[in-house]
Amino acid sequence: MLREIHCFTRVAARLSFSAAAADLGMSQPAMSQAVSRLERATGLRLFQRTAREVRLTAEGRALLAHAEQVIDAVGAFTAEAGRLARPTIHLAYPPLVGALAARVVRRLAARSPAIGVELLPAGRGAAVKALADGEVSAAIVATPAPAGLVTAARFHVTVDHLAVPVGHRLESSARVAPADLAGQVLLMPGSRPWARLPGRSRLVADDDFAAALDLVAAGAGLLPIPHLLARTVRREDVRFVRLDAGDLRITYALAWSKEHVTPELMALVQAVQDALWTR
Image (cartoon, rainbow, N blue to C red; front, side, top):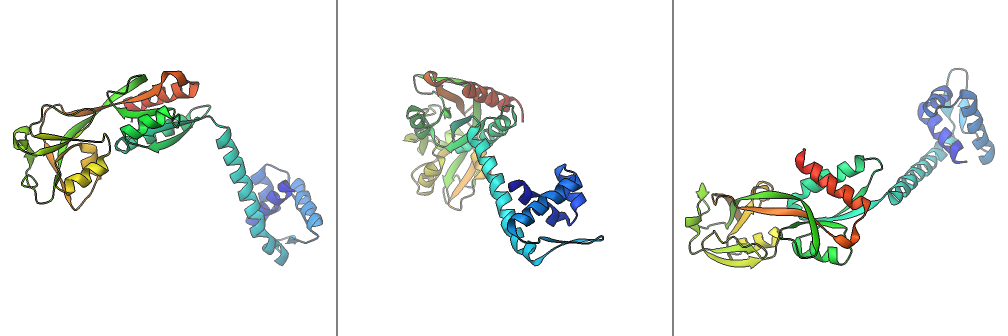
């Protein structure tokens, strides 16, 4: 019956048995027979046929929407079954490197056989916990990675801006030098405080830039941030100014547990490495 319904919807779309048959790679007699079988099964006449034209009957028009829903449902079923049958890997990543994560997903989807990737946006602490709990197969984390994890595909994100609250004396500065930070409270990632910067440090959660920017807006401190964040975040209560602090950067790496290595994981490692080398 499904084949007959498909033929019915195709003829209804084209209003031509020959054109519908060509679309589905069938002969015209086979198409006519399929529609006739559906008409006998329903006890309804679906088309009015003349030598010049094909038109839907009132009954055909009434059934067409239902037939199209059947075809759409079958298509969705087939697509979901294919997705479930496809190997899938779960990857945690900091939102800051979301563009890289997206490129990795596209690369793995385009390979043969395709590998699906489920993405979990997460800061360093949440990503490490997800790895430990087995919720993800791998995570992109700020280094140094916790002991016991294998890492590969290291890359750097330059930190060359400073987030300051609106009204701060540095707000209108074209550039901020380390000397300008003397006496300021600096919000630093817990795993990698930057000792070269003067001022008093207040440690914050790694990769949770949204929460850290809330602290900046509240006047709790200033936040050195990557240029990627300064370029994409827009807040009325925070300003971003250039920071000239030399080679200040965050290093990230793909990390995973050595006890859970699979072919799909190795394909992910390769995809991340390839994505870092090409755009």
